[in-house]
Amino acid sequence: MMNFATFAGILLLTSASAMAATGVSGRLTVSPAHPGPQRIDESGSAPMQGASILILGAQRSVVAHATTDADGRFSVTLAPGEYSVEVDVGKARLPRCGAVPASVKDGEIAKVELECDSGMR
Image 1 (cartoon, helix red, strand yellow):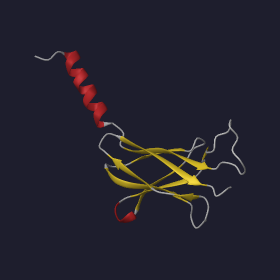
Image 2 (spheres, helix red, strand yellow; image 1 turned 180 degrees about the horizontal axis):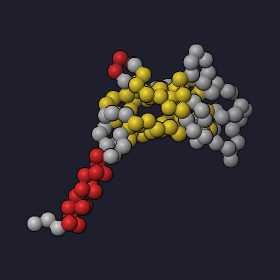
Image 3 (cartoon, one colour; image 1 turned 60 degrees about the horizontal axis):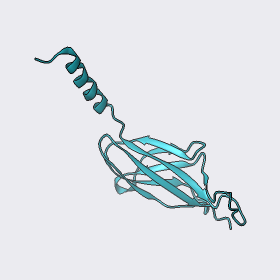
Image 4 (cartoon, helix red, strand yellow; image 1 turned 135 degrees about the vertical axis):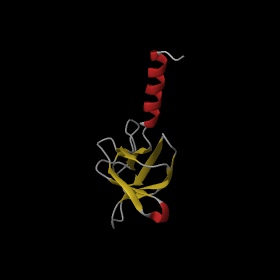
């Protein structure tokens, strides 16, 4: 016979696993962060705040979007699956940003790092 404490523990674990977040989170940086030579005590990259992040699914259709915060971070809740994460720069030539794949598994957050080339030299 199961006591109340054991039953409550099982119920809590079941509820926690059912509420586990699933999606993609990441950080976007841009480099070089400033023109001219990089000094030893300076970082060559900087967080990219306010950028529009696109999450693309099958047939490259947009399934979600996010905006980066002051630290260049973003997070999106998604169903498990295979996605491509991109920066929406519109028709601008700069910054140049690539895409990264994200494999989202049930109950997990896929972590991605995006970097854009500012074009400064």
